[in-house]
Image (tube, rainbow, N blue to C red; front, side, top):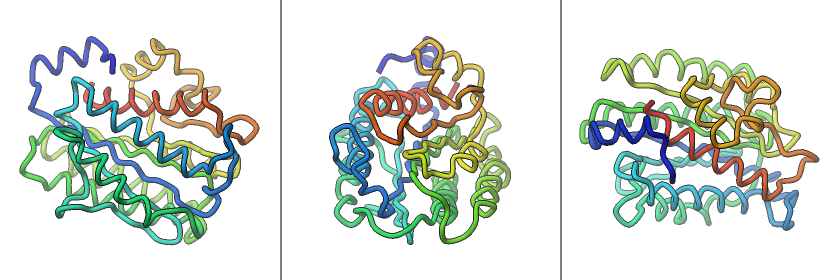
Length: 263
């Protein structure tokens, strides 16, 4: 993982003084079994592969000691991946995050509808666990990545927006009590044209200038929140079909936002 010089400076100055929580909120509704992909595998299978690639990349990164990664699956219900009493995991040594993710797969194959608001509420609880964790430094950065190809079916889009707003106000306030530098962001990825793209864009955080610069330097800004390029939102793939190019761009988007969370 090639890191921007600003991040390298941060790591050289204080390599173990902060952590970065990357929290994956993953749709496992029945529509994720649709083979709307370049190789006709399920969208869920591509999502699994994308997350696994990211976890391997995180483990090889110079930022690896700082990363903590959690997973939340949702359809009709919500499943927070837990292991050893934890809901988020380091990527070194031995990549415990990848192990926990793989152990969650069989129980989280696609079925049911799309309880997005409940999933974000579960994410809020995980973030509060992270805030309360005294085993890691008080300088803490959070990015929640919500992947979905659907619309809220259990509650309402307004409920989704309300939970996101609470994350950006009450939860962020608690996070900043530990350290005023601390941040929380929400990034959203629409995995199909049936996704509620209006709500996903609405709840996505605005890119910081440093992040925008990194995305521009990496040739990624065109896929981010077109045509405005303002928010942490990835539009659904063209023609409602996941391509290699779209999938790789999403992977790099998640990677870049995770590695720039602290700048």
